[in-house]
Length: 72
Image (cartoon, rainbow, N blue to C red; front, side, top):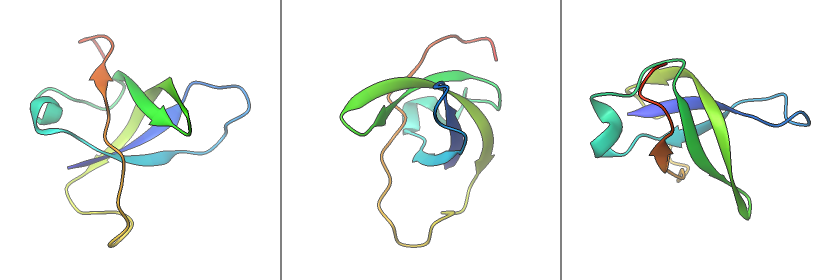
């Protein structure tokens, strides 16, 4: 599964796609706050959408690292 994530940064106004790791697949929902790799750093972001199909074709994606809060 894949998630569209909006990083929590005032300079970023676009979403990015991340793979959802197996351990989060059953609990992750739209609205959850997550930590994702973003360049050389890690940032918090909000899950905006989820999809079972790969949104970018054969492009390798980074994975969501962790769920910050279990409440969306």
